[in-house]
Length: 348
Image (cartoon, rainbow, N blue to C red; front, side):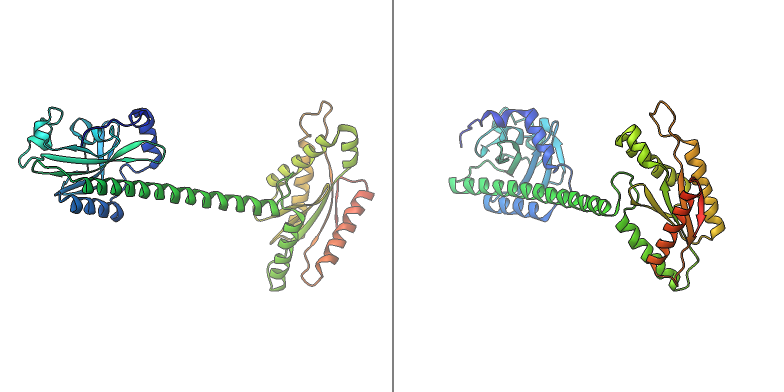
């Protein structure tokens, strides 16, 4: 068949190499689906050698290799680099008689190759990545029918490549979907402003802890905390400073409380902390650390230092008492702390 040069898209090597990289096929393990196509090509063309060859920057690499026991060859030893410049099957009836190929190793070696036919592997967007080629030890030709079948098999290689990309895209989409689900689950259980547990999540954790206590778990304590004069912070400095104050309090809580403790935003400027395996004396020490941390860390970005304080109600998490009664007792202790001058902790 006479050589017919392909459109410009096939000869733009920089873009072609980028397209080759996008498929991620180079240096991948051998796969039966590609081996089978090479085997069929060799059978149809009655050729002892059949290759699925991808033409890289300085080599041709074989995804499938029937009758040739090498994984790749240098580009200057490649006939396929010419095949990818054609719009149809590139046929060299006798390599030894063609000055472009007469000095190639496959032609000068013992038991040389003499015949070559390669159908370009062309992507849907027009880039020739390599060829499905057959070689023989004797000069010969291919019939028009066989040439058409070789082109059809090359298109099947492209379908395998597209399937690989589609599977990879689907895999990436599944990863992204799982990440999105994780983010949504996190948002469903997290207060957006402070990053602490939200009321729903904290209530669920309280019920879990109550069940553990009812089965004889170690004693636990609860702290109900309310930032003092928070309305004044918003009124005087604006709600953006109020948000900063809540975020500062949340940050200090992460520093003060243990990893096993759970702190949640109960609503507005009110927070709850669950301290598993903790007695009242230990919980009082934690409360004092919260008071001290607030005193040492003013809200940033305010000219006149804005130092927060917090009133707290503290009590045992009694498994014999209904949860709503425990929370009401904590709330009553919190408001006692407010009445007694704020910035203090009162036992429920």
